[in-house]
Image (cartoon, rainbow, N blue to C red; front, side, top):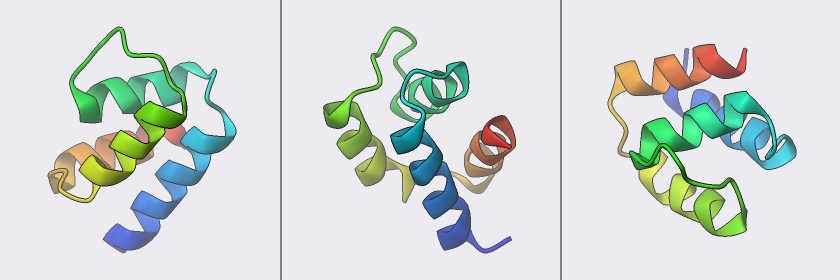
Length: 66
């Protein structure tokens, strides 16, 4: 799958379902902080960091939201 499409779908999911366990898992995986709350601030940080995520991390996050 195309990297841009994966990132777009992950971000879309996290923005729509901030409270979900899947979003929490994605954010904590990419930001490396298990206790982080999913809010607009962390979503912005996720946007900035996810583009540099390793392919396997991206795939894992994509798998989590699907």
